[in-house]
Length: 266
Image 1 (tube, rainbow, N blue to C red):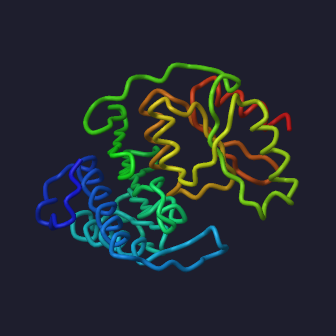
Image 2 (cartoon, one colour):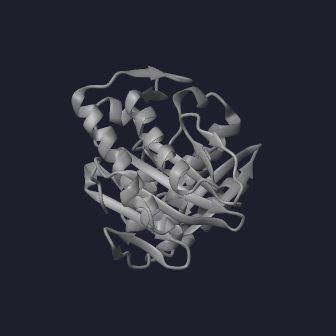
Image 3 (cartoon, rainbow, N blue to C red):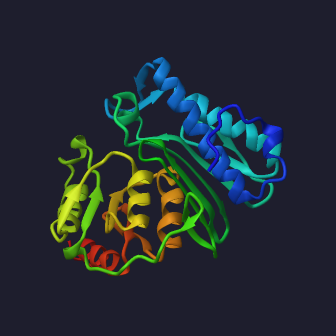
């Protein structure tokens, strides 16, 4: 996947949706990484773990500007505030830096992510993870690819045999409507990790390195790119409502079924 931050919009003309998504996440991640190397400051949004940097804003602007020129009929939604209604029935969903706390504190577990959805679901999902040197792309009906190589189908395994990636903000532990389902979901896993970037974690699910993923109240830019990767690799995804909170699940088919049963049983 190209990651040349100097690539101009005319170079993108004529690309199909998948190639465009791959190019744009490569550019967004390259711009963010360059800005981090030069030094960025962060400010909080809702809490100390929810940060935004100049790189988040600049990377989102890069993608939005390209889509405005190249897909003017499509809608655009971005984590950093972009909203453009769709006239085509299709909408691009942008997470310019997923894992901003990791990004701002100098760790490697962050990525740029992009999805294209229509009325039937996700058409394309793309994730660029510079720290791992990985470029992920999923195309509906074609599968999931890492640097152009098709990902083999996931081997099925139950939750009890795999690692579960999840997240629960400390402030939400006091809320039993979140805490109790979270405990029900996590206690059945072989082991558990909290890595701080949903799209990176979901790419790891698609790669078979993590067997399952579960989080409540996930926003679409944190869900759709990785959902596409997991489904394209033969995994399952699901959303189950528990006490008014939608829980987003992904992983091997058996692990996802186990998570749903655990959440519904409480």
